[in-house]
Image (cartoon, rainbow, N blue to C red):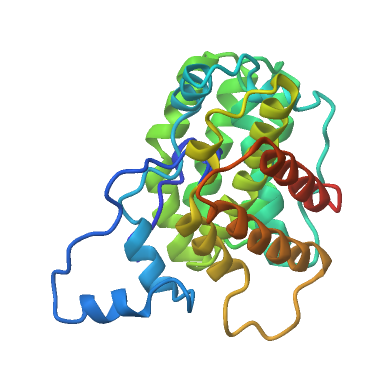
Length: 281
């Protein structure tokens, strides 16, 4: 299956930093108008994939930080992540494993420049554990093991490591989708988005700077894309507590994203909504 979104840098703000350019490709077959007709109301994954396929959903950390600075925000996102944060990745529910793995990936990339060797290795290890539990194959496992070895023997600097994560992202995504299932990548990205949304909202709130809130948070189609996978049809059981809360949170965030203007109060609500989910982990 063709990758729907760039796994890019593995971590950052899926819908928050999405490019706002033309994201709906022109129909190329007679079936294309039918897919478009399904629209977002029914949250059809194929129609949603078509709509966001050309969006840059996961920019690199360098692009992300530059965008934050352009918006007048002074703090780095990674500065809000505790150095001793130790999120458990392996749990019974695989949807939750994917979400937790996404959060670890976000923390890894956003703090890579400031983290010591032990912290980087710990997060790489958790990422590897999560991907293995989700069914990732030997190729992805070997890539992460190689990163671990090079961090351990100091044969790669942090800038190079960050760039290589970005360069290898599309290979990793195609392998992961093939071996673990098409639902895995969107749920991992939902985790990275959840962490990123929370951090951006926190920084805006702390600095009382909301002028860029529309650019960061008015991305309704991307929120709908995540909903379609988190609350996908065909699940043989009710979602667990964390996934159920994430579904509720995504729907609340979709309501906010649909507003003509995102206010400071809306940003504070985004912070509190995402806090609720993260505090369950």
